[in-house]
Every structure is written in C-alpha cells, then in structure tokens.
Image (cartoon, rainbow, N blue to C red):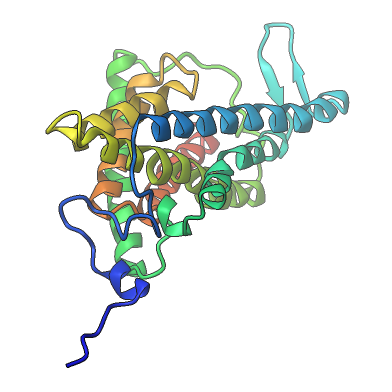
Length: 267
C-alpha cells in the first residue's frame, strides 16, 4: 500500500494548535533561540533607522519649500498633504522582507498567509478595531482627567475631503500594515516561540513585551498607556489568528483612521 505524504501546502493548512505555527524550516525558523531573537531586534532597530532616514530625506525639501515650518510658539505647522507625505517614511518597517529572504523562508513566516478566510479576518479586524477606539477614548479621558489634551495646532484642520480620504487609505495600507508586519507578524511571533522555553506564560510574556516596545517606539510618553493597550488588542488578535497580519492590520487601520477623522472634524 502506497502511503500519501502531504505536500507543503497541505501541511500549511493544518495549523499546529498548541504553538500556532507551520512546518518549521520551511515557513518558519527551525529553532528560535537567543541568537535569532537578537537578529530580530537588530532588524527592528534597522527598520527604525531606515524610517527616520527616509522621513528626513522627505522632510528637508519640504522644509525648504515652506511646507513644514515652526511658528513663534515653537509649534510645527504642516501645510496640506505635507504630514501625509511624511507617513511614507514607514516603508522602513518592511525590513522583515529582507529577513525572510536572507533565511530562505516563505512570506507566511511573517504573517502573510495564503490560505485565510479573508471576510472573517476583516470582520474580526473591524470588531477589534472598534474595541480599540473605545479603549483609546477611555484611556485618553482618564489620562487627562476628563479635560482632554491641551489644544495645539491640529495638522488635520486644513485638510480637505480628498486628503482625508487618502489619509484613511494610508492608515490601512501603509501604517496599519507595516506596523503589524514588523511588530506582530515578525517580532511577537518569534518572541512567543522563544519564550516557550522560558515560562509557561509564554504567550502573555510575548504579548506584553511586544506591546511595550510597540508603544515605546512611538516616542510619546503621554500616549504610552493608550498605545500599550492597543498593542495588547492587536497582539491578542494576531495570536488567535495564528499570526496572520490581515486582521490586526484592519484593526490598526480602523483605529488610526477614526483618530484622523475625529481630528479633522475638531474633536
């Protein structure tokens, strides 16, 4: 009797429930040890440096053209479309693609899974995104004692409806996707596998560590608590979806889009 050996695509469909990964060495690292984790953090640091460099390259000619300037109070003033253009500096967060290429892995290794239920992922993303918005508003209310943040120059106040529409697209396609790719699909997934040998609470440990780093890298002390909680939502969704980044990207994009829309209307 000839036994049928499943091919790689068949193996990929069969999620390994206890660890939520696929065939090691093909779609994922055969071993995630401390050396691998160090390399992960090196790639994250490289991504951050690339993002800053690209942002500066974009910003300098815009400053020279007067599209970005500082007023007499020290506030940064962004002309229409200027801040939106700066968000493309986040292309630096695509370093996970370099990582998987160098290690000979498939894109599934960073959360870009082929066989997923797209409608379900999108619906879950929208649901978690709605919860993120509510928690964001609640934490912001508590952090400011119900008074709201001090009013400054609203960079979205001078936008028109076309710019607002582009902002929403960018929040989903560029910001949400790139940040979920590097923080959940790349970092958290490997931390979870590594932490399995460190603690029985490995999933929680990976979730918390990634959320702390995610929030800290935004360099906003006042907004740290809210972003930390948002990171918990996104990381938990990623874990439940075996680290597919589609759902978290939708949730992330929805939260950021609503923030921009509220700012646009002066809330």
